[in-house]
Image 1 (tube, rainbow, N blue to C red):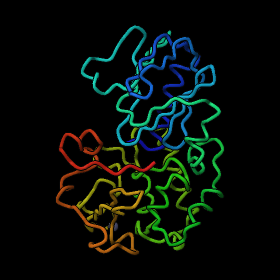
Image 2 (cartoon, helix red, strand yellow):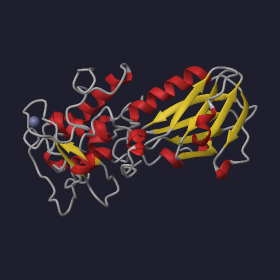
Image 3 (spheres, rainbow, N blue to C red):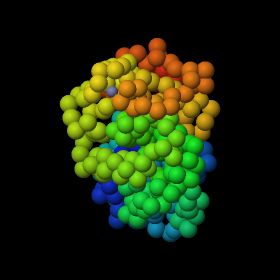
Image 4 (cartoon, rainbow, N blue to C red):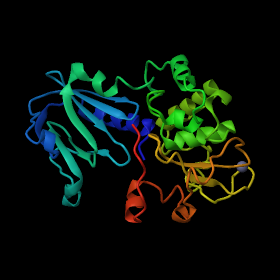
Length: 301
Ligand SMILES: [Zn+2]
């Protein structure tokens, strides 16, 4: 599940492989750009902003991609191609005078003028992993709606960009607050610093680990651990399909004993423990979910 740090890592990988290369052939397999042709253009940059990626080409052209739950960039070496089993998933082939890049399952893939980039990323709050990270502004935006549940505020990319569900629920756990604690009752600066520290750590290490324990099944405190014992107190981890109908609708996990605070009533926020039974962080991910026929997550940008 792409979060800001995964997109950042992908941008770093793509940058190393493709910046300075010239496009030899492009093949857009999305209707709105079916006739677009990038051949002859130089790849100038791959920039991550929150969960968005901006690929810039010579001639003031930018490719905007958003991974949402399932998108990915795949690289293959010069002269190689992806196996045909991927054909249905390919949205763009970008063949260069070096490696070839494939955009797979990318739900957002659009070309725009480089000068128009603010149209697609201008609404976002400070980028948690960005060079110009502005903690004061992020805290100000988070606190602007004091009655909002903290998990929802952390996921709102207009407050700060890059935090996904994993980091949001783990931050709530480590700060000892229920995900539905109102932001006015949360030390927002401490929460933001913690989330950022974990995400920055993730940039330099494999996987997304919040417990400090990289062993399989030990990497998270509550995320993906419905009904399993809390690692600190043994209380079964609770799960809610949170915020039904709200724009930042996500599954939420928490330990009711380590994270005191408000919890929405079941009539407002239906729980679906039966669907999640046995689901843990190893079997998580959009692919596994699709294979098991489980419902998808609502999407938030
Ligand atoms: Zn606990």
